[in-house]
Image 1: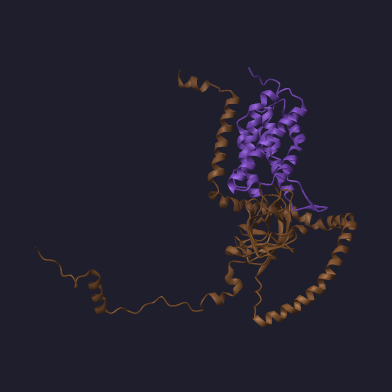
Image 2: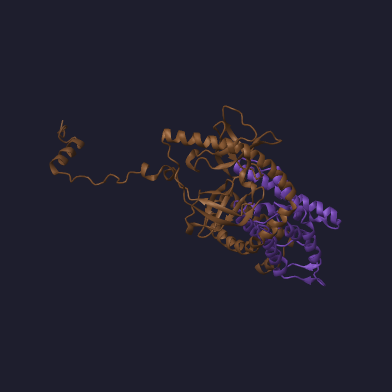
Length: 317
Length: 171
């Protein structure tokens, strides 16, 4: 059979198609299991492009959100009214208790000289794209490295913690939501001071894993960030404890109370910001310069080090 | 012997790039952070519709590559690990590709069930990959909801099949 005959062979299309399918699947497998680190730049560029497109697409939506909100409010007016009445009744009783506690708090602070936590710098951003699937819960917001955003910065809504920054390009950042299956956040239960890791699973209420507390949690307990590990500042509102039908303690997120279309990014780097950097870092670090060495001591030291003086060179047997 | 006589030739632009562009545009539109009456927009995996049509109408070399590009694009858009959706889409395509002989001549409801099974294969693989990677099982309710809205896209997939069923796509 000549080469010309080989060129005339036409394998069935189905075989070629199956071959290409298997080859591409092998490539995709490689990407999944080995491509995570190589995809950083690609993801940053893609976020930038998707953020620009999302900003354009979301602009008319944002402009019309007032109309949608008005219609939604009108539809839900009755239920909202009932909720507001019950909230008002609860708030009135809380008000008196709050005034008492505020007075007591001021007295105690004066006694122990507690300093208030200095306010951390933060910037505001709009959400431009939103991923809500079970395998990924993240958002693109229109603020990036040019505005000072860095990976790890906590992201808050009006009501509480939303997530943290996991990818930054020049003008766009990706926010990993607390509900994402990759999200792990150290939290504390305010009532018991118990610690746990808030673990997202793609559902609306992330689970409390590795729960460590003397008292069992109760439904309604407030959950705050614990600050453990230094990833997030301590005390950011997260949500309330709920027990779901599967028997797992979970957290109903405060940030679910309203759409997260407008967020604040806390420019938090580490705890030196919270405690006041001046307290931790010396204003004038010690000099690294040393005195000019003098010849005799150095020569003597060299002799000691090599043992030339202490152990004369051995002569022959 | 397969004959193409009398068949309307379809260019790759129409058969491959058209559905790819439409899928990406639809995915981008549904990623807008819009809530109506407190509810977010659904997030179906539009790319499974062309995966079904490409596997059913005619075997070809290009659909796996187009699905890989679509999958990587969805990964970059949604923030999943690169290659995740590419692999899930290709598994669904492979399921339909190797079952296409038994699907030939069946009625629409049977094909809808086959499309649902292919979606199940894709979401099942996604569930397993996520569980392996994060040591945390994704929410079954979340997976079920996205699966349901994706299966509901079958009319779009069927429209693609009807449009190009008698066309010659052997470019």
